[in-house]
Image (cartoon, rainbow, N blue to C red; front, side):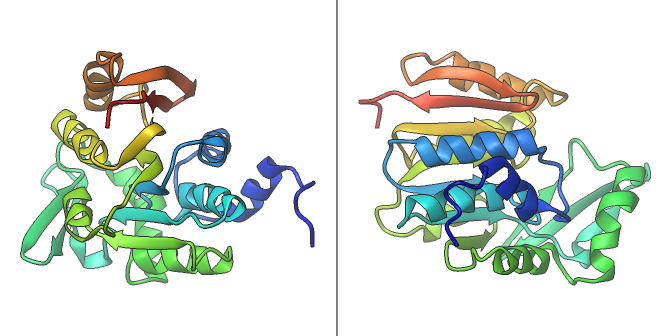
Amino acid sequence: MNTSTNPIFGQIERLVEGVPGWSPNDQLFSLFLLAYTSEAEGDILELGAWCGRSTSALALAASKIGNVSVHCVDLFPEKNDWRKNADGTYSFTVRIGDRLLGAYEEQTVWAEPYERDIAPLYERHNGVLDIFNQTMKRNGFADIVRPWKGDLLHFMQHAPKGFRCRLAFIDGDHSYDAVCRDIEYVEHYLSEGGWLCFDDAFSVYEGVDRAITERIIGRPEMYECGIQLTRKLYVAKRRKNTV
């Protein structure tokens, strides 16, 4: 069936229907357009995939471009990785090799959203990676998407030789130091003219806002076309001759 005349927004809506997550559809459509129309070289890199909502939009773009893969870096926590903190909130820690990687430590998950959105996932699945893989298989993207359980440092240690990306989407640890570190890591791979995108920008996370302000907006010699594209998606393009 020729899908070229089917509206992309509708295709994305169908792909992510029922997929747990917090990425609004206008943001998914924006990510699709940036990835699909980017003239930069390379694959797509996503940090923070969860169950595959944003991944599905990025993989749809990759499928239409051809010969492009989506590399998804996430801690993909299992049920026993989570712990309840003394104040009733939740955090988790995942072991990757000989390293312990924590999440939601500075800005923990309140009990209500944890019990409403996260705990039910583990009633039917051992871990988030199982859900993610099912989402990719159901949407026909299993051959396009490559999940990496770990952080960006782990990815850098095992990335394909000569890896470059046309778009990178950062949605990992939202603390200032972590976002700055992720920007530094991603810049090793982001091609000239490639898009660097941030979730939860200029919404409620001071660390994300500060990192973008200092490391992206504050470096006009490195990035251009910076814009708050949707309610919580900030994007900027890497200038040429900065690699």
